[in-house]
Image (cartoon, rainbow over all chains, first blue to last red; front, side, top):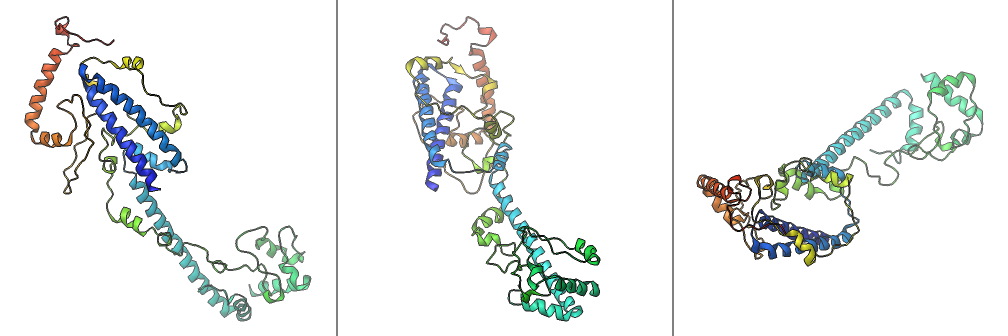
Length: 134
Length: 245
């Protein structure tokens, strides 16, 4: 799995470097640079061919759209991962708090009902006693 | 309240066989209740269809209770918020990596070797990923190398680019970090490179001579502007002029 990404990353880095060098040639063009420019243009096309070959290996990879928003804003996409983990943990803690509160409420309710309806609650505990959660 | 509780149980026992009160499956109508119990029935929610844990099997063992459901958490090992999901899915390492340390805000910290101004919003220069999703490019055509005839379209004017197009080489100033990373770039043979290229070694040297460098740049710009074909004062003064063929 990581190999597919490494392969694509390598091709992209070479492509970007080629484009950067192309920009340098064009920024101050000389007649003797023409051969180099032609070579770089063909490297660019072969780079695109290589990147397209990588596409087939990665067609099942899904990227959340929110990551694209981070990148478009010039923000680090790792912040999205960080925020996801923090939100998941916060929600986990919130739900655990609710479960704990309701468990305490249940035990209090059972104890109070046992005082008011002892016979009925004894029957209830007999039915649920085996599988009542602590 | 105690009277309503016991009378309700009493009315259920009088209605039919012991199991009928719990034969309240989907599609089966509720047993008819006496008129004095109608108001109470309105308050009790009707358990129709699949809602929550399964109903217990009808039987004398569940009396005087009806609609008794299995308690949640008792049927199998359900994954609830009670467990630490980060630990359950083995994400402690990822959590410590992203949330334990400070993650830098800018995109250039994630991609330090990418040239150009990547920290600017993509909407400013039309390079946003959102535009790529909204208007996807034409795909499916094959890439073929450029032939000699096609390459004639790429013969350029000599000389430097006008100021307005010189944006590619501008990179944000990289802050000096304690851990110096050695940039190993592939050293392809370049035909000619301007002194203002982005080689990292040359960049480091240039940063030291900032004030002198600025003066030299200004002088060079003045000289280039004098000798450029676009300069109004030099129309027809240059003996050799290469034009786009």
